[in-house]
Amino acid sequence: MNGGLYIDPMNLLHHIQDKFRTALKDLVPDVEPYVANVKATQDPKHGDYQANCAMPLAKVLGKKPRDIAQDIVNRLALDDVLEKPEIAGPGFINLRLQSAWLAKQVQAIANDDRLGVGFVQPARRFVIDYSSPNVAKPLHVGHVRSTIIGDALTRILRFLGHTVTTDNHLGDWGTQFGMLLYGYKNLLDKDAYNNDPVRELARVYIEVRNLIGNEGEDEDAATNPVADACRAETAKLHHGDPENNRLWQEFMPHCLADLHTLYDKLGVLPFDHEHGESFYNPMLPAVVDSVMQAKIAEVGDGGAIIIRFNENNVALIRKRDGAFTYTTSDLATIQYRVKEFKPDAILYVVGFPQTQHFINLFEAARRWGYRDIELTHIAFGSVKGADGKVLRTRDGGTVELGYLIDEAVRQGRAVVDANSPELPDAERAQVAEVVGIGAVKYADLCQNRTSDYIFSWEKMMAMEGNTGTYMQYAFVRNRGIFRKAGIDPQTLRHNPPTITLGTPHERALAIQLLRFEEALRAAIVEYQPSGVTAYLWDLAKTYSGFFQNCPVLRAETDALKQSRLLLCDLTARVLQQSLQLLGIKTVERM
Ligand code: ARG
Image (tube, rainbow, N blue to C red):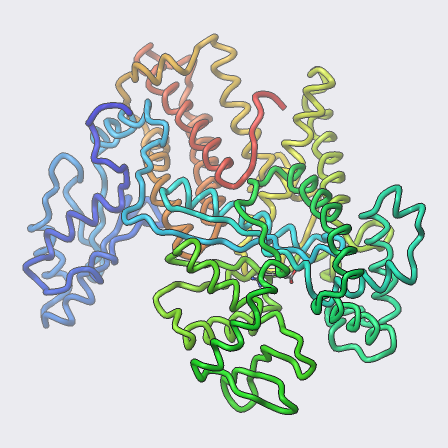
């Protein structure tokens, strides 16, 4: 790390907020709500940051807002950091950072691997439960959201210094498995199974689902002979039937291998743990005993055991026939994770339809004694086709993850073939993967995760606009400057030149670069990876303004050229690092 010019960690917002903390100290006993009123401005006309604390303070102190604003400004230590603040309108305090100070900060992060991003104090311990597909079902596009969002959150939290344990909570024990067992016993094509077990199991699964006739998710609720037979298979599995348990042992390695191939192609981090529902099975009777003893569960109709939240909201934890449920298994999971990983927070990246399940689960866990731990459902919306309905393949099938990945690579290939046909074939094949997969991830992550979004290859592959392809291309073009001039950016980093921020474009770019930590922290407050893409989009636009207005290789003086080159290099590194935090790779040419 480069030595001591700047205040570590580099966080413009916190630096200014510290100044306000000191300035407000003698005005009110609790300064924090007012300190929180210092924010980045939307419009550079109002400065870089703006403090809106004079208005609420005036109410408390019974004075005029503009007078309070003036009082605060008088108390504010500007040092060599801030220009003289301006008081606007009813009492807004507009703050501008001194360009010379900004220049020094930029120079100081030139040789910092973390680009000025500090470690959050205190660090927290997280368990993140994501991806978590039901292994018997073919993976479809909905699961990709949980996987991509969970992967990005893990990377961002770890980069900020938190400890994250990732756990793929596979559905490897529920009704779906009973359907698979039934299908295997009654509908299997042996040769096909020997050839490609996962494909054949997936086929059989779909056939069983059609027989049950519930297109929706709720096979569990169906009442017909096939549904009954499937439930009987599940029950046999749970009660230790040797044949069904042997088949479970036989299917699982194939299902897992298939899943891991997909994860690999998708380029997501390997999971620390993959404790599926089956893992918790032996713990379930004790969980039911424990909640009964704690008097949070009761015996309901016909001997079922339930946890009651209000008259019409109960969670079933043991069915009349003695079977345990998803909730029982999730309670056991909480108990196990707390004991094993001692987390401060457990995050569940699961779609909206399970909202009620998690509300109930978290309430039950609190009553059971897990009060000091953050339990959060990171919900997300669904992926829709152009018609606003469930996404389908061209021939009308459901979009399986494998198909999605192959199509992404084809799309990526089309981009690089059109853009750089001169690259060697092997390189283009590799770029195709990076671009195609990157586009899919970016399109997903740049949405507010709570919204549904329309899946469109055309939009996500575009070379212009807020897309992964554009960000990757911005990186490539930036690198091209150094290649063209034959300059090794390492020398700039080891021996950073003096930075000059003589134009608004250079100044804006410097601020944007120095806001990296601020953006990451803001993104994580709401567990919104879109905070990072929003930052990337701002950075890319600011860089483009800089690049169009400030000649780099043809700058008027060599000193200016060096200064601009360093701004370029830092932009490339922040782009690359941000993309990496989203699980998106970069290439040197495309
Ligand atoms: N397997 C479930 C599904 O695909 C998601 C599991 C989410 N995690 C959990 N701990 N409940 O619907």
